Image 1 (tube, rainbow, N blue to C red):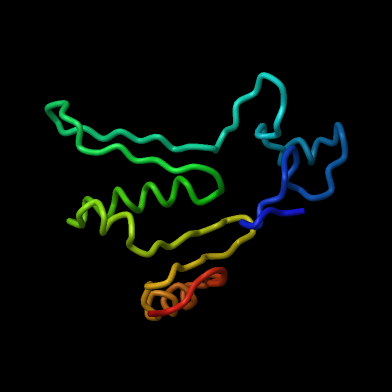
Image 2: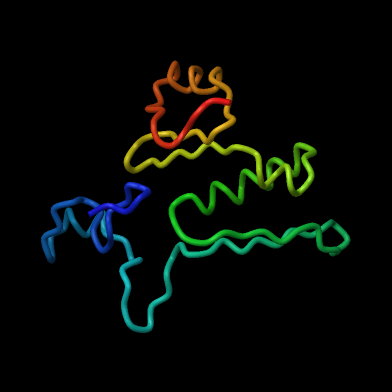
Length: 130
């Protein structure tokens, strides 16, 4: 069964896994739990330095399919002039890709949702407008 993010468990993403099937092996991922293995997407440790080597910030997240996008959006928010608290607390846009939908967090303007829909995106998921 898929998790709360709509992602199906490994080892196969084609939903009808047949061992040794060439088509299935094209979609399989190496994130299935096993002895001596490391998860591929459990953390996103990010260290950013100033040009002279001084620490600018250290960010990260854990678990789920939203880690990378969340960390990246915090970095963008910092670059756009927000302070750390504002950058972390700002609402985010998440494009799941699989299943194909875009979710908008509370606080994203309705105009953004309408513009994404107009471009053909499937805007669903966990969102509400302030």
